[in-house]
Image 1: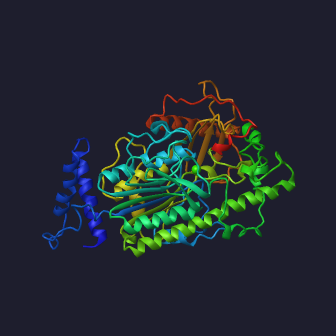
Image 2: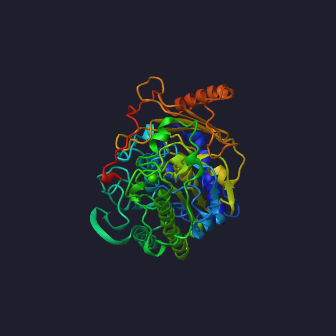
Image 3: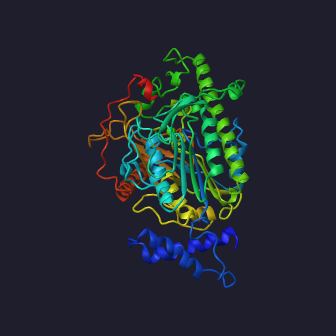
Amino acid sequence: MTMKERFQIRRQAVTLFSLFGKQLLVPRLIWSLVPITFAYLFQSPSTIGSPIAGTQSGASRPNVVFIITDDQRWDCMSCAGHPILKTPNLDRLAAEGARFTNAFVTTSLCSPSRASFLSGLYAHSHGVLNNFTDYPRDLPSFPRRLHEAGYHTAYIGKWHMGEEDDSPRPGFDYWVSHRGQGVYYDNEFNVNGKRQVIPGYYTHVVTEIAVKWLRQARPPFLLCLGHKAPHTPFTPEEKYRHVYDHIPINYPWSAYLLEGKPRWIHDRLTTWHGIYGPLFGFREKFPDTSAAGVVDFARFVRSYLATLLSVDDSVGEIYATLREIGELDNTVFIFTSDNGMLLGEHGMTDKRAMHEPSIRIPLLVRFPPVIKPGTLVEEMVLNIDVAPTILDLCGLPPLEGIHGRSFLPLLRGEPVVWRDAWYYEYNYERQFPYTPNVRGIRTKKWKYIHYPHGDGGPDRHKAELYDLENDPEELHNLIDDPRYEKVVAELRARLLQLQQETGALPDRMPIDEGIKPELPEEKIR
Ligand SMILES: [Ca+2]
């Protein structure tokens, strides 16, 4: 029996079981026997009597490699058409698997998004609403579900939920991570409970640890690999430090076209998160609104891009290791990022806002038994969909009561009715007073964003409306145009409906204390 056939049998068994057993609480032992029983029922006559490889040990389930970068834009891969970057290893994943052209995060901020990836829940439900809150110890996650099903599990690299705690988290047999953001060189890691500084460049250090772990991992295994790159302060490794020095880089056009935009976007220009501000340390004298100041901005962008070359090398090493240990095609290989990054669009740096470069993420999935090479998925998928998809691919029961949805049918290329709208949320942070509270809805054609004050009263910032089909760069805010009143009313009603459906009401959020020029504390930058 081929891998693909075995996979289909398990899928059928699980689907059938879920029809009858969805509402039942089934002890884990019984659950583990059900797929075996159904698998026998669904075997072709020629295979009945021969053992199904690994059904008792779970060894026939696919492995999972989940690689997550930090702040990588959706277009920062050559397969996504980036004009400068060359990422042959990411391109190979896309060529041999699926690339999602419309993948988004429901909150464009590190910790809330990471918790959504793990749990399948919106931030208002998992409770990780800022970068200082840890993932709740009692909240189910896809790694824990895999661990409970017998997977050998590892978390290696940036975790970044909870600023102070680096101790091993539940659900992982092997743990190598650290507090907060970490540093690019000679980072201190907590290795299974013991702190040690590991010399070298972060991307390579975590890759080397991951490669070692993979060589001794017992299938089925789950490797979560969290990169620091390309997060600020962008620090390329030495060999790539000057690779883009010759590339001319300017402020994007949209930075000059702020007419019609809400006032807070103008106010942000000279802050920590604006193009005329300190650029995360790349500009010494600020604010600098002069044309000559673009020199600092160009260094900033080049450094960001160059950190991704090491990430691409890392993906190549993980790929080669999987092939070397004979597990490449039996591994669900996922590559993504926790959020995007504005590189000057609308005068913004950073993420948090609901504009496209912030909320879009790269998403690649390679798994030959299910996915045809070169698959392109255009439907709108979200970070909350990843956990249910992984469990679905592994033939495991879904996490209960989550918001995300398995996109396995999209990977298979099956016709399926998919979401046509989704809800976005971000809460104002006193530590980073450069973005208001954000609530919004995105459909294929429209995006409506508004900025509640947080006291339940009327909004104090202008809202935004974009026709994404005709204005994908979000240059023309249509909110003041009376021709779109009906569209806005419909989008507002749909937004409320989505909030109701995801349990986001009553909608609690901090009070917006305004956009401020002050810099964030050094240790949380
Ligand atoms: Ca991030």
